[in-house]
Length: 439
Image 1 (tube, one colour):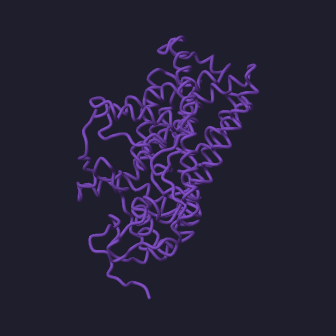
Image 2 (image 1 turned 90 degrees about the vertical axis):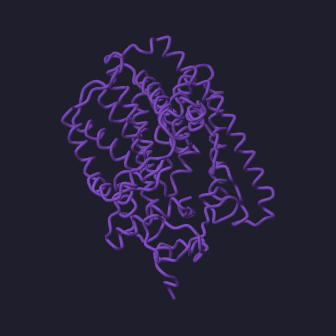
Image 3 (image 1 turned 30 degrees about the vertical axis):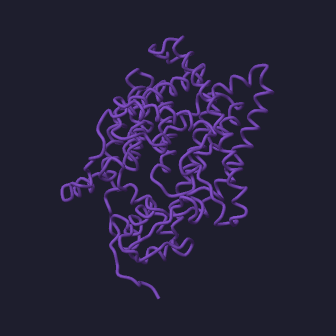
């Protein structure tokens, strides 16, 4: 998937920032344009994209770092699952998280939300680490990761909301010196951005939508809650489910391959029912226990499962609060940062079933789910939007100019883009140069 990843508008905006720093030593202190207006605060995306380009001048170089972030996130979460739920839970977690089609799809192309999986894992680790007592380094990591992730994509506000609710109900403790130092370090990349805002106020102008839109219209809120269920299932949507095998295999193959891929996607959608049952089961359990009652510290020593239940429920409630206040309609990528929390309810249910007389049937269902996930991986790799050149609803853009970046990063070499088109699109920070640039 990484080798086949393609470049669209969002990717060109990111690559332009990295290119300017790696080649021209020009630092862009703000991120991509946002759907709510303005640009993402801080220059974290510039740094994350530029650093790999110093080593490999290819548009896929930053994606290698994204993949490494996903591997690190899985390793960290797997360790937590092993410690709190036991070795038996590791295989179901591998299916629900590592083979999750949402995580797989977003692990191999360049995009802001794709970096956030590691920050979600660090969020859980830092809070779980301080369940019983405060630690300097865990608090530093928590504060620093919250600030840096917000500079990558505003959906990191979900992590802040989760940490805030869990802290208010004293589910974990913090080391205030670690919080202060982590906050100070996280603010450093914002200093150039603040200076840039003074000269160009438009980069901070969020002028789309209005606060509490989700609470007034309800649909944006319900849409966000639906993605909580979808992200933990095999139900895919958006560009993930737009298949076209014509660019690689021809129109004759696409005639039968695309309907089969769509049927497979429909089969994956059925798994949402199981995720819904798992969430209702956990919610009923928490309400019966007393959902406002604080989990005693000594309980966490006996059962990490109780803490993971609490973490999942309060992260979900934080998502409800954030989605209520969101100024725009919630999109599928905005919940990716808490995907690790969304898979906890089905994981807890499956782990419980594996200890009952239904264990054999549960293992068979898991094997079937793994087979569907693997087939989804294959069809997405060769037919989904971000992993094929052009095709049905592809990422191909008509650009109004040419630029050395398009050639040195092998963008137009791998998938030709229409160039020199009057009225075409252009990255927001890349200076235009008259064509032709290259022989």
